[in-house]
Length: 335
Image (cartoon, rainbow, N blue to C red; front, top):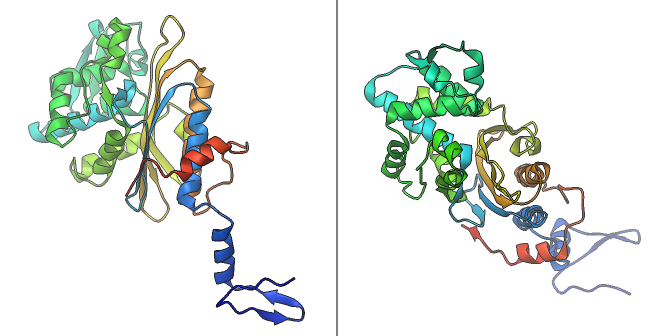
């Protein structure tokens, strides 16, 4: 039996035809081999399908393509410390303050019922900490007390909200500081954003559109030095890539729901290009490890795509027919 394709000529060596690259491509298309983008979409949908939470995703690829899922306002938790840092550095540029300038941290700030490596480094009576040090604690270590000190410096959450609006991000809403979020769990839902707005904020920042060059470089390094969330985006980003990011996690409600388990930032490629990724896991009944695994799986799939060879299955499992069908629909791809 011979396969005859009009317009295509096969050359033979002995009895074995040599199929051209064109024929191979045609056969791959005819057999329904998915494009790299559709493979990426399938892998992300597969990751989301393993979660019982609402998983908001926004990925800005280096070619300008945007991929989103559940792109609606979701709680940020400590991801909000990234826009806080932007507002603080902008304030410093406008007022002439330097990173080496110090703030006095009085003992009244050193509450014991919150996460604060800075507090643990100071005597009980308090001490002086530089603005650069406060930013490092806030961004790289997600220090709650340092964050609130910086918020007080610039005028509170309302000042950060106003700053974001002035930069074209009015839908990123900042209403509460860390003290307010710890005072009432319901307040942990007050700071919200769409995943796509957070990814766009990281993009604008990294491109130098928000801060001076020295401050952009400083904050970029703080994000690359983040120590929290080793099992989230970080677990899915390996060399040759580098990750700069900000995590955010909530308490659990009395019925065991984790309000948010988030990670967002940028992936630096060896050729100098960047990809921006936000994963906001909201209202999750799953355990923390499951939430983190979803985020890591999405990051792993994105890195596979960036390498030009999206892994056949970043989770190590076979993809479901349902998620493949969802990816094939092409929903939420925005050129």
